[in-house]
Image (spheres, rainbow, N blue to C red):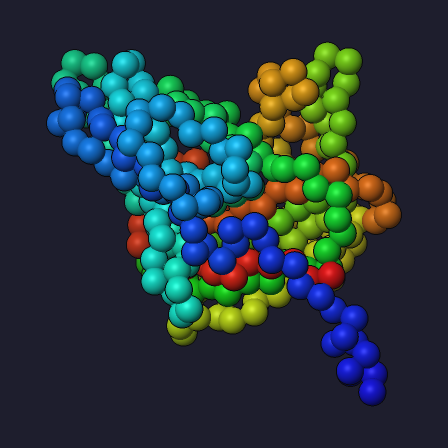
Length: 305
């Protein structure tokens, strides 16, 4: 009887477009100087097809991704490492770690490594440089609920060769290391000061590393959310810590100005939630560093209450 009561008390809420059945297809024509080809970018959102070299507004979806529409020194270039793919029941999202390159003799020579990532928020298009890629992302959405767990289906290919690649604008290097895929869902209490700076306390934490390839699809994988100071939990790992350093995140303040999210402290467990950040990525090493060959498929994202 207790088991029945527990089951009936649980409910699941689907995340908008978290079944990945609907995508915006964008056709963008790259600059003639690099071939002038028409390339395809994908956005997780209501079905639509757009032929335009214009920024996407993201007003109809909570999702953005590492797919990039860039305009560097006047050269239009795209990069796609998040695509729709066939899942067990319909479509899913495929996230892959791979190179993006752009070479014009005498002007630009860009070759960067990027993990395939999807996240709640907006890409601030067009991207105009690669010195700080996180600065072109508006991280998180308004959110005031208190779910118990994040639940999803996933499939992973994590070769674990022991080698990482660092690909930046000017050179590529290889060194020892490993790069697990990452699923991150954090809840924050945010506020702005009189200068428009964004401050935050961490209210809830759910971060999971996928360190090896899966044997097919892992169904109903559950990430419990730790409320309050996650460091006090037996399940705490260093990668669950407050956002800082190379993984600094940005958001637009009330006046539309881009500001660093200053995540300053752990909140009390009963602190109100104002915003949520979700990110799912094929690599967890940060910008320009990763393991080539990492691929992560995700589907059926929902929240348990």
